[in-house]
Length: 378
Image 1 (cartoon, one colour):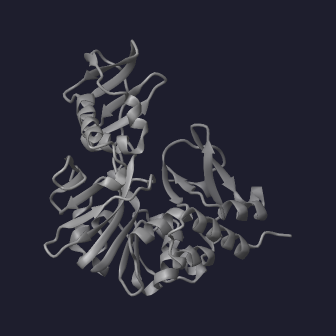
Image 2: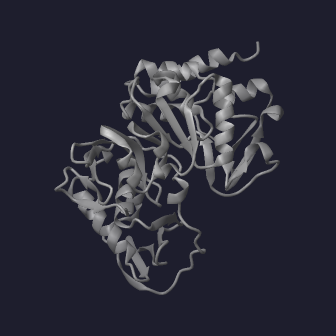
Image 3: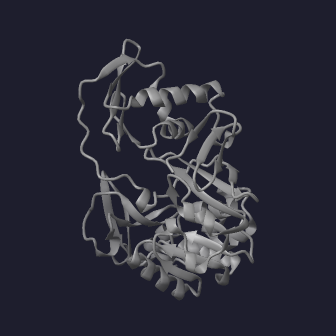
């Protein structure tokens, strides 16, 4: 018997419901109702070694395609602005658009505490799938969605129209908000940001909220809902989710040269660099070194500062670790100091982290605003 899209959607909704026991039934029903197959077009990318391999609907057959589409996973649809539909072989590079896994879409929406009747700005339309989920639950008339890539925006508009949803769509840099349709009761981002953009504050109604993932160039993110108080300051605590969206394109790492080891200062490391394999540990590390990226080797880690070219790398040394540092910033010193503060606080998970933010100063802290804290690179 051919695959039934409605039955597959229902099975997907049940899978999402089991994975998220506290999920509001309204979001589960949205997953069961929105025809995800309409939003992936005719092809998607899947990982293939160090690159990405296109999977074409016509080649795998309709039944297999529908089963793929209705799995709770992210399907990459664009890599370095190359569309899957126009790719005939593997490509390399970083994903630039995707159909996000449904459980993450509804989890983010639930964290945002969205309610029918409130005006919502979604930053990052992508394929339009997450926009459709919002429309189904909250009403198309309440949703404004903005997409950075004009071609993606046109494709998403067609997908949404075919599915019967009519949100207000815009093309532009979502980090600037969408002033022509402001003000909003809530802003929700389906991309990660290094800090909260100024414009999002200015386009919120009193008591409005911002829900996004804060992520650095070490790619450990924290999902947070920030509520705006009467004085224009936003406050919130991170969830325990270990997830991330793609970084907003203007917040992505700039092009950088290949790493080359150079002579530098060498000392004994006080901590095992394996702490950076822990989500919260890596989150802390990128707070301390916000313009650094992390690479791993067979024997340790490498830190490289994108802004200054400073480098640090670790190597095993007599049962411990030695660290080598080169350049104007001693990156390991910065990271190690932050990790020690985190350990002194009991090495908590992200639920013990919070954030206080204005358009001009944004601080992530442990425990309370008076606890260990770090400034985001606003």
